[in-house]
Length: 124
Image (cartoon, rainbow, N blue to C red):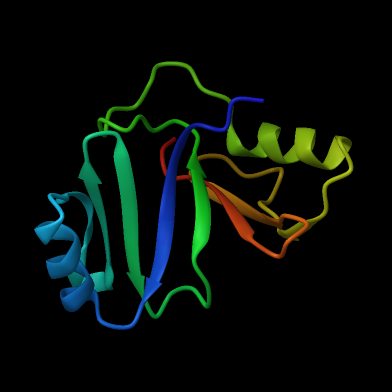
């Protein structure tokens, strides 16, 4: 099961303060929109998403159809197929994507220690 690029999505209290902090560590914005309270930053292979007011907790995030470089690979496993495989393997979903939909979608599951995992496809 190829889940796509990995990043950490942080639920931040102050997007500007968090952005300034991570920029001091050498991160630079590669995506997102501060006006919509979220940005994605990269430092080498490390990717961190900052989300103000969108999530209750920090999330482990996988993005099928998105490479760390910001490129979209020609071939990837659609999020609905990943969801189907996860369910076939007995994993319970917290949030499910509509299996009949197409394009961007996501699902969420929780690991045994309560860590939420977001599988978020934001490409067609």
